[in-house]
Amino acid sequence: MSQLHVVCPHCHTTNRIREADLDRAPDCGSCHQALFAAPPPNLSATEFERHITRNDIPVLVDFWAPWCGPCRMMAPAFEQAAAQLHPRVQLVKVNTDEAQGLGARLNIRSIPTIVLFIGGKEAARQSGAMGASDIVRWTRAQMARATTTV
Image (cartoon, rainbow, N blue to C red; front, side):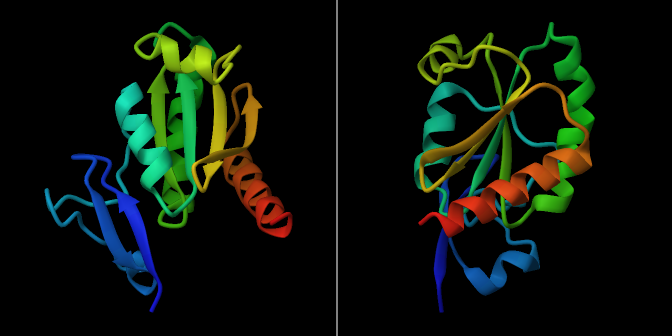
């Protein structure tokens, strides 16, 4: 049976999960909290790197800032999208004010920007506030596109 690595959104430990067990609401082997959290956690630059490089499932990142009105408007939609995309996609957030170096390195020029990472590499990005159904639709379309180009 296929095994996947999933990084815990709470303690950032990498867990090995059987693919068949993803839909059974798995808990972290270290901290025993749910591996798919709502609301999506806000990550530091170091935590971001761990999630991007160690997750075998796609990671959707919302780059945002607390002073950004559209970011605050999109936050509930991103949380609602997580409920629809989990457990096939891990959703996380990065505050670009707290992780300025990361935002610069990834060339984040406007916020909110969502970026889909697959296999540790950026697969797609979209700037501007979106509703939950648009986030879900966009993410699924990008995942389908990524699997057909491999």
